[in-house]
Length: 122
Length: 157
Image (cartoon, rainbow over all chains, first blue to last red; front, side, top):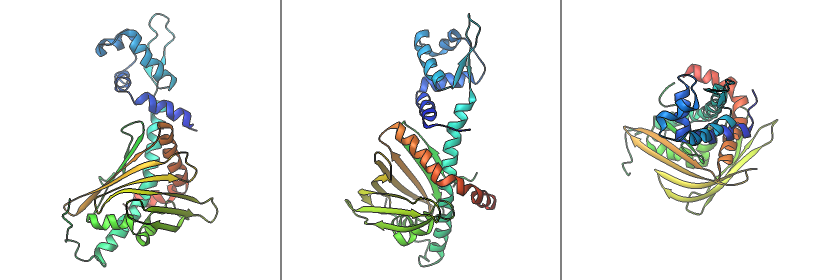
């Protein structure tokens, strides 16, 4: 799946707020109405709605069609894309560090023979 | 996944933090990051890339410049200026990757315990957009070609 920088911007921005992360954590348990969602947060419904709009724009949540309740539910795909990116970046860099591991082994057994010697300066 | 493997986190909108442990004393890890003849041996990215240029003037106000070449792909480079140096535990330097709109501030910290060294590298970027771009660029430069051999490396690890 193609992930545009704009998508990721929206996802990371949405996740940068603790209330919005808490909302997502709550939604992981199942869909709820805005009223139910607002209860544990000691926040007004409009304040929660504002957070929901940010999450909705990022595609992290969707709203049901039921006109009365408009239940809120989590959408996993954008979150998976964001973490997937980090994971791939990590793997790309990790290949460098595995080469560095080999080099350090060589340095330890080679010219820097007394590997036990420590530089204790902090 | 071994505990030694690289961890990447984004604790704030403008930061990327990388942590990695090495089974070597701090001085060696420091040398491997600051002596050009050693840096050139591992900071290569995916197979096929070489590092023909690695210049390091390790003093406050000194510059560094890295360049990577590939027989079929467009080359890539990065460089910056050292702001703080406390060998062998801490370096703060700027980094401006070729083509990037703004520079980043890198804080490189090594701590040693029981002969093992933990590297924590914090990259502070000018904006969230830039941070996300760095993640994407790092991926684009590193990932496609590295996947095939990375699997082998990981399988052998």
